[in-house]
Length: 465
Ligand code: NAP
Image (cartoon, rainbow, N blue to C red; front, top):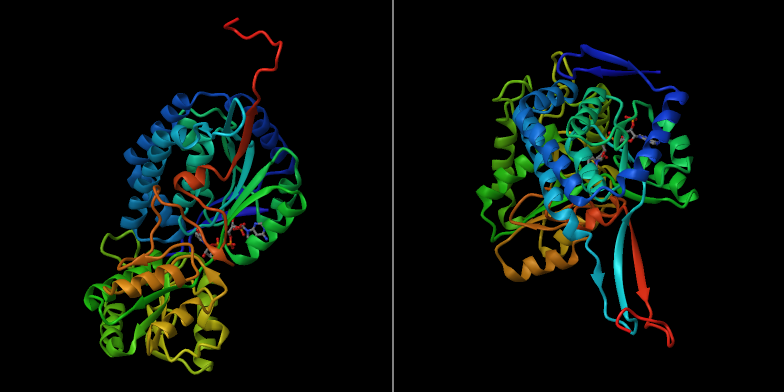
């Protein structure tokens, strides 16, 4: 099987790779296990030194890494370079904090001494998506390697060059050869790897079907999993909000990464009192976005990553229109080379139509008018997903209700959802389970071991005797 790197702006094939053979996979699994035996005992200071080195490489070569991301999956170059910088940040965050996050925790009990001790689990398989081709991998790898695990990356098949570049960063940073390995394989090879006893856990960031598949295989094998899946995040705007700021943020939140972000705001739920003003300004700004070659610094919207994503988007918009939606702007693929789709605004989407709460992965926004906060919360929660959410209001009581009542892994008040190494990240409902980043993230792939030491028994010689 061939794995191809195809430029979504031009359709040109940049490089092709042969998928690993069964024998090559076997060698890599064995290397992962052998490396883990020693690597698990490396002092935190040594791991931190290598992780800082990885951060330095990312910072120094951010322009090259950014260009590679843009060429392979089409994100605007400025965002791609910022992604490389953010990866350096997460490496530094864990280099500086891992030891403290995993320090023994003394707990007073009736024992002479009892405490919680954290130990790495072993080789962890990471199945990753193309949309943040560096960030998704580093936010898994930095905590996993700092905890003493080793990583095996099965990256999305359309970003093989990014996958290999990341492996090289860890090698150049000084990590032992088997500490982080890229497996160039298709998704059909995942099951056998998950069934292999040398792989002890898995994390998947991707779509709901992929999550179901990986979780069910891992479930049968009783292996720990973390799932970061899709989202249909609400972005609520109430009358007390600063409307101009809310509109500008809303447009960014919908179109970030050409609209292909799990935490992109996808459903805009706006109070009736301010709805018309919000709609007018939102449509104006969506119309004015600069579409073009993502390698140009001024481009705000580049191509979608694959032709299939354009097809899916087209089908979803057509379905929404059939269910009564009106298109205020956009609604079509763009007649040019590459996978381009117009920034689109849909209104009057039937809240009972499935498309109203599906994940829409592209620059297509749906606006909903609501009469009060109860209706806003009801629509916000009317989705199988529960990843992020944003609510704009300066009313403290409304803020408290959104924080308490929205079913999501995060609530951002007067802001847009974003990941940050210092804060846990993850979802509820069909958006997955487990958390990445912060202390919670590094505790996912460790054995939380209880240690209980009894009082010295009578007649036992102690050191003071
Ligand atoms: P995807 O099609 O699910 O692919 C993600 C990864 O899973 C790829 O490596 C893919 O490999 C692999 N995969 C697909 N089906 C699989 C299966 N049955 N068994 C094992 N592996 C399988 O998702 P995507 O299109 O790359 O990414 C977009 C999705 O990711 C969206 O739903 C988005 O919301 C979600 N996402 C979530 C987060 C989060 O943090 N919650 C972050 C980013 C993205 P191949 O490429 O070889 O098929």
